[in-house]
Amino acid sequence: MKRLLRYAAAAGLTLALTPFVAPQVRPPRTPSSDEDVPPLPNGKLRDEILKADHEKDLKDAAQLIELAEQLKQELEKNDRHVLSISSLKKTEEIEKLAKRIHSRLVH
Image (cartoon, rainbow, N blue to C red; front, top):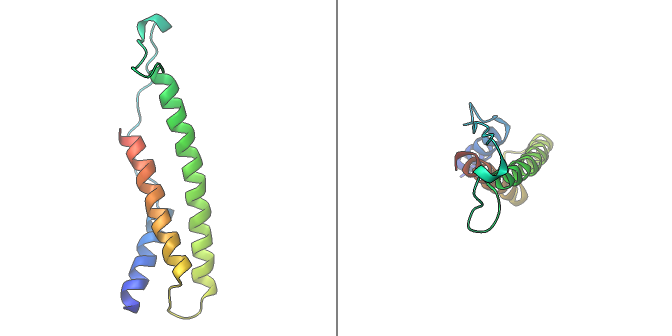
């Protein structure tokens, strides 16, 4: 059980501290005018949506770094080989944030 918890903490920390390797970069699309880009069904232009996604990615990445630092401090402070519930919840939140960022970058 201790081994599993130690593995989960290490995996979460590794996910949080490992930068995304070669994320797919969307090539910038510069239409000749705004008239060339039809609005999406909800009325927003594609560039507005991409810009909003980028802002969300930056916000989530900042939160990811903060959680990873908190987790690291908790693990360093704890001299026993016991994983606290709060540390486990932080690893789960780190994983959710990383997946959320990844899904926005891929799609």
